Length: 581
Image 1 (cartoon, rainbow, N blue to C red):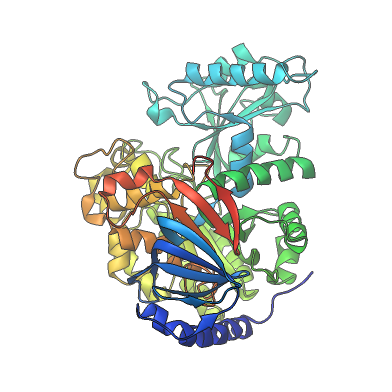
Image 2: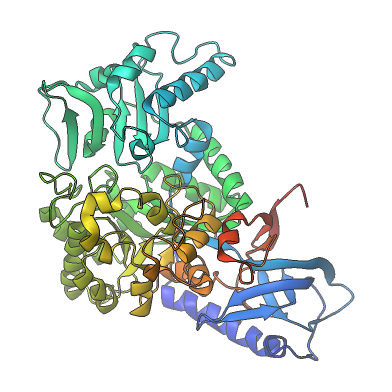
């Protein structure tokens, strides 16, 4: 396997290129004429351009010059020769490409191709949507999933959320059994931390009333001790391991679907939160073939059985900067919606429940030391305040063991943090990787789950920024919709799609448009060790940029959510264009 050069050597080369080209282009940055002339490349004219400098300040420009895959200059009076191409952008708004710092790429692709229950209004409606989906498959295949008892054919879906249903009750196997008595069904909750299955799936997995819940999971049972069809966190693996693995062709279909979707939304780079060895090898093969269409910062899944050998393989980076593998994703707890987030005190609406530790506390030292000791970044999923505290404490201990690798490790979500623990992120240099739309999706149940007092340390973006912690913003697609302008809107307004509540939910934790934009650009790049490569439009950086239909820095914040992407450019090539423009 090709290994990346030493990081310092790589950064040094990029810095030198950046320095010399910046000196050439400095007059352009100063909004004045320059005597320097570029003979080749593409000059974008009549641009309403915005980027951020290294201090996080907004920089405006009206012209940008690129050559091949690199930005040569930005400014207002860039001189070019006769050989340079000219593009009149007609005063369109140009921004750096958006970086989503936490998503699940193939999960998104699968979600786009399979049953999507995100908009289901009740348990009955969800079942009806599944039946309609299966009927659609039946009309195009000779052997539809529901035609016969075939354990190799499963109905898979995702997106249900009982909190949005009238009774707010978790679904049960009964409704699925009636519709699909002979076909195994497995449907993930919107957050991916609970699964709704039918009796056939339980039968295949050998789950009965006598089956104990695994560590870090729960087989939910009724008053008679029988499984209800709801599996939380690690209990889902008992069924999931029986679902046929996707073929290479399936994985490519998922990647293509996700690529089309993300590029249409202006996302030029995504941090893939937990990939298997199979997916790692696929990504590397595609990077070597130069067929990836957007940049991927991939986190190896700590749960993969071959994680140690993958760590021994070292970092990977392809020559074009499309794929970087130098981090590991590990799970601390579950999610708040399914009451799987690990809390320091019981749930306010479930006093006998303190959540689940997906990775037991006693296993944390080995996990952290193994990953950090292998010179990899550790990105640890922690939603509840107990999971966050355990992670911070273990980071501190492991940093003492491996002081050469204590920079830019991350806590993914950092959703509910004890107020007194927030300063530890800054003290230890741990980056909070957070998803703004989680707050606006959770606001209808978060106070029920944890009460008003604990909300003071929840979704606390402004508090983190004010103490000097950079936040890597993302969406957690397909848990949430991937559209980054939904995330920008949520971060600034603390409101949902209907711009409610009127003053925003916990408005004191809202951030400015520039701060939110920074989280989706240069701070996300920093969280992936790529701030010298992408994240802003500066000379020497990759030509990743987007053209949008409105000026997000000038309009009312409530209008940001409706932003449409006109063009998406990656590595100097236009990868998406809205057909309407």
